[in-house]
Length: 190
Image 1 (tube, rainbow, N blue to C red):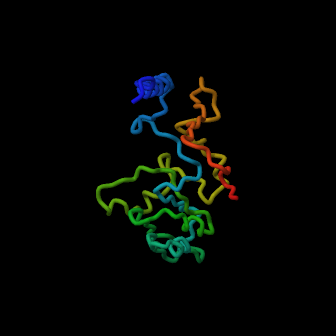
Image 2 (image 1 turned 120 degrees about the vertical axis):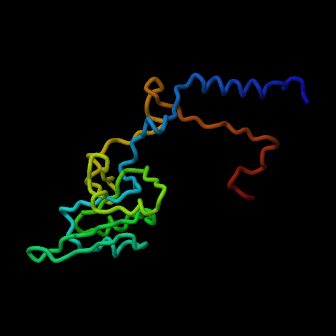
Image 3 (image 1 turned 180 degrees about the horizontal axis):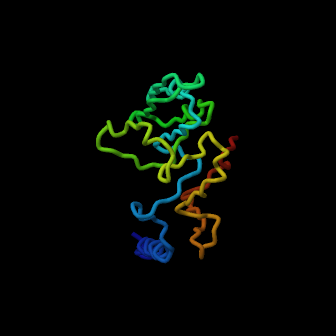
């Protein structure tokens, strides 16, 4: 062990610790504070707009898992009325194929990401729990027209803001090459 490098590692470690100690925190206290998700998130809920739905069951046919169940009956003016619209979100892979297949823009993926339950039967959602409300808002996945009305995503680290406004400086760790230099530059051969 060399005497001139003794303790240098500890000093470097303490320097990194002090530098990060003076920096503003970038963590979020999750249950109390929540970040705004991306505008095109594929959240773990399916939203249904009943006024636009014709009961054609195109979404049920497009679902690779077969999680959507639609029951219709003949209605007035040669139209179908939807009596039952259920989505088994416990088996759903949230691929969004049902949203893309809907020709009437009646189906959306939601922005929620906290839908854990203790019992699987609670994950089967019916007509009353898949309609729009204040808590259930659609994402812009496969619906780019909705993107302008959604809030901007919040991030933990903002690289484009100044440091006094909570921004962080993008820094790369300098890696030193130890030992001899190669004869040829990397990527070239003789």
